[in-house]
Image (cartoon, rainbow, N blue to C red; front, side, top):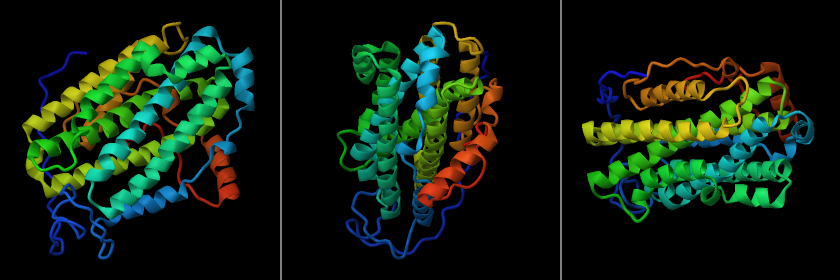
Length: 363
């Protein structure tokens, strides 16, 4: 697709809200959310939105045992074509790898640098959810890939599957630069942190996983693998909340340190997102290499560009591609089925999830 010269400038940030006087660096409230220290102060609450996100996440509790995979096993044995089976094998291998990368980054990087007890409460909850997702994908692999050697290959996807290794290399490239930083002192340190956070939110959870969801819901639209789709409904909700939390952290940093959001940072963000689209397009070529009727690599790339525009807008950057969603099946998934699923879970666990699930929404 021909592109015009991009406008890399960020939209003007919202005014910085007045806050109460801060204590010295250490256990009290820091000057800014990225200032070094270990803030323990929850009253007065400086970032109540993060606490609200934590409370909302608790309402979305679910377990893998709630999901019925019995029909999926029948579909795998009797209904899926070889090309669709290849798609599923690649997909579940990526799922397990992707959420493990996210969980490691939460523990090693994000938690130590986001100096807000409210945000750290949310990150603790998110880490639980990432472990739950890995359990879900582990269960998928055990059920979907009965061959021991093939399953071992899927678990070692980074070493054995080039298209997944390329995605992992992308993640390590953009997130690994702060691995050795214990504190963020310089502007460059803080920009590197922002790139890590934006890679996680906009590219991994906000692009790679959204593309993966498209494959799942494509099969769901054909009446296949209802167990996978049911579990993905929950994962989708979790990942959307994770992404929204990360973007709220970015907005908070932008209010507190607007000087970080300059031309240099915006150029690097656009470069990152462009690279993510290329890497995910290569994965699509692998996933669809058997010729899956009803899906094409061209449509998948258009969908990636459509989603990427939403991520750029969330970051206050101009949309770049002008793409439209080519996948009708992603507009709204079987609302009645979702309603029944959520009502059943609410009855079992006494935790509520409100609202319909629209997959073309600008998360």
